[in-house]
Amino acid sequence: MDLDQIVSDIRLAGPAWKERSLGAESRGSIDPANAEEIRQIGAHRLTQPFNFGGAQSSIEDHMRAVAVAGEYCMSTAWCLGVWSAHNWMASHFPAEGQHDFWEDPRTLISASIVPKTKFKAVGQDVLVSGRFSFGSGCDHASWLGVGGLIGDKTPSPVICMLPKDSISIDHQSWEVSGLRGTGSKELVIADEVLVPAHRVLHVSESMNRESPGQKLYGHPLYMTPWRTTAILVLAAPLIGAAKAAIRRFQERMDSHVLVALKTTQLNDPLALNRLAESSAEVQAAELMLYHAAKQLDLLGVAGEVDALDNAVIVRDCGFAVRLLANSVDRLFEASGGSALSSAELMQRIWRDVHAARSHAVLTWDHASHTYSQALFK
Image 1 (cartoon, one colour):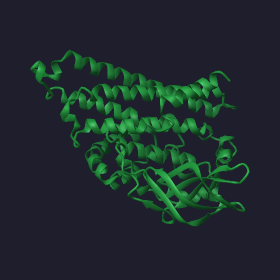
Image 2 (image 1 turned 120 degrees about the horizontal axis):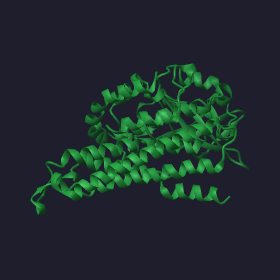
Image 3 (image 1 turned 180 degrees about the vertical axis):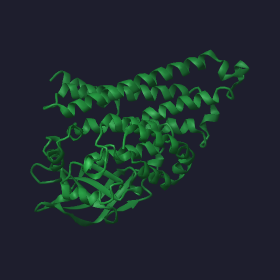
Image 4 (image 1 turned 90 degrees about the horizontal axis):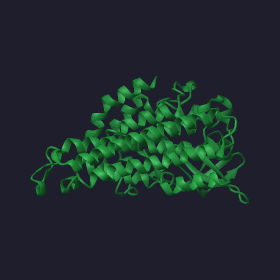
């Protein structure tokens, strides 16, 4: 399993993903065929350990594969990104838990891990219940992770993994304007479920590089900082989506008639300027993000994570996401009324990109604050 083969396979599958993207919008979930093709390609296994047949590669390789998927369907790319990221997360669990998750090594894992809900510790096991938001790709996953807090005086975050049949999915909970096809629905555990200790991850252990999986593998891939890893993972689909917007704008130029100029957009210097500026922004953002990924991979090797080095990665990622969104905005605002059709790809890309950039860790406010705080400490 290597990146070049995975990218080649994604490009073969991609046109079908693009064709199915409108159906994913109305369904509120990507087509099951997309998920099965991802399993067959193994694109989500770039971050899976060698022990289970994964590539155990790098965050950069993961991002490059996800970005290519984003050229065809951003919702599919988003799901691929989180499934791969959750393989990275699952690699931190105790070995017995990993054998549960990857009894079928091609399995897909979705999760809602923000620790808002109070769980109960029962010895080393954890009793869980509640509603958990934003379970991207959950319709197609076999295992689902939920995040919560245990302890009274100083609550500590944990992630508990459950087989899909232990959790209900609220299919009415994902009525949104963008990234509709991700199916980021609420996971519901109405009655308490006892999760055994080998399926529980103590997040503080992972952040300190002391989780069972990190001790087991000792590989730099699993030593990268949690939040920064998540930020880069979530940024990758926007690279492909912005490239798709450029391609679609270019395709429409010769048929998009500008009534006031009595010509098509292909003969409008201002439209050509927009195309050139957006393409330059996308290339700049792509270079920034892959450089940031290389720096993140280096942090995995470092004996200790330097706070400012980490913050620079967050800053660059936030700025690159802003560039990608700006590049799409510039093209969309010159695409005319016909681009507003629900069947038109351009407006879907625009909505998906803005849905993604609104994620709490992808905003420029978050990135600039993180950098400034580290700079003056």
